[in-house]
Amino acid sequence: MGAEKNVQTVKDFFAAIGRGDKKGLLALVAEDIEWIIPGKDWPLAGTYRGHAGLSDLLESAARSIETSAEPGEFVAQGDQVLAPSAMSETNAAYGRWDAGTLGRRDAGTDVMS
Image (cartoon, rainbow, N blue to C red; front, side, top):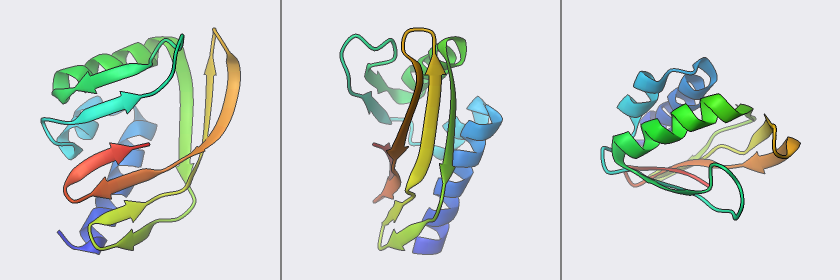
């Protein structure tokens, strides 16, 4: 897959998250996706495997947090795309949290870290 196609995949990924489009999001990720959210004592922390695991995560997130991620740019090199983003979240346990994040498509594997 070329760099341009990888950039479009990452753009589509962020757009699906922004729309709350679970079906569209799942169509963009591998069936054997492993999504890891590090942390301790955080409601969504854990490892989510496959489409079923990601679906569970998305449903839990929709019930417990409001989130937004706005990529500022997309930088492609080979099979990788970096999308430095302004990310914010509001949840009942911690209030508002602002942080940066990266969205990356790496050699056919979708990664958020």
